[in-house]
Length: 197
Image (cartoon, rainbow, N blue to C red; front, top):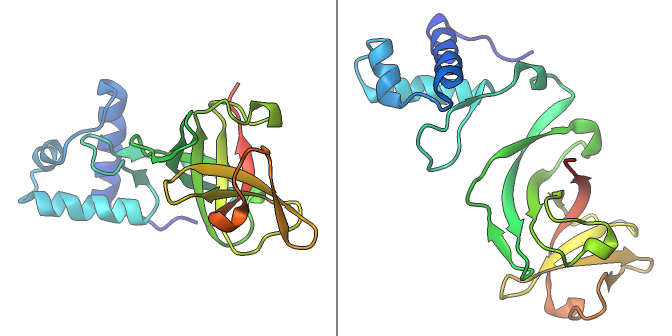
């Protein structure tokens, strides 16, 4: 069960939902302050932070009017939201995803514990290996590498490569032209691929 809300938190959450449906974007903190005749923006901010902590809303980092109610159907034990932190460009460079959003992921696709992030594929480099532009790779930052793992590694120049773990603790590049692993830094294990049709 998600934590219960105070009456004021329920009212603010409902206002955000209705406002967003009417306008296509969320209300500003100033508009929330005016709607509920609150004394200061800091009071609004406190209510918003409590709604976020309790899992009822999400907002994009450093982006105005980005408050987003989380779908109540996804607030069940079966799902979690994974942040889409990176984008893999056509030059095989790992970039911070400027439009940081989250994606709902079934918990059964993830291991019980760990830090998970999403990577949006925006390159044709791995098409022959079944990874297409637009795919989202769910990555786990983990030192636990199994012999069947696909792993993401980076160079000092932030170029990205995919390797496959093989028996004996060795790693083989998926694409033969890639540099030897000794020159690279192990970043994360690919634990799922999400594709939208």
